[in-house]
Length: 157
Image 1 (cartoon, one colour):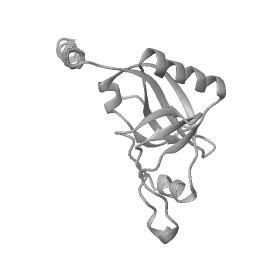
Image 2: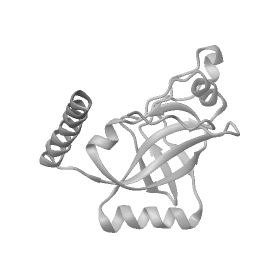
Image 3: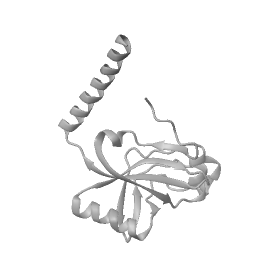
C-alpha cells in the first residue's frame, strides 16, 4: 500500500530511486537557502533531485546537482538551474553528518523536497550506504514475493 502524504506538507520532488540504490539509516530535515526565482519555480512544482547529493564542505552543508528550472517570467534576473544550494542545519547535526560521511563512508542522499506547513522549503536527507548489485537483486526478489503473497492471500481468503 502506498503511504498517504502528510497533510502539512506540499511535496515538490521525491527521489524514489534512493530507496533502491541505498540502505537508508537515518533521516534529517534541513532548510534550503533559495533565491526568489527558485521559490517561484518550486511553487510551480518543478524540481528534480534524482541525481543530487549533499556534501559537507566549506564549513557548511551543500545540496549539489539538484535542478530547479529557471522561472520564465523573471527574464534576465533568473538563477542558475543547477547551482549548489546551502542547506540549513544546526551545528550539532552538521558535525554528526560530517563524521558519518568522512569516517564511515556514507552518502547524504536527498529523499524529498517539500514546503512545510509554514510554506518554508525543506529537504529530507538520509544518511545512506550504497547497495551492491546482489543486494538490489535480493530486494527486488523480496518485493515481488511479498506482492505474490498478497495475491495468494487475497485469492484464497
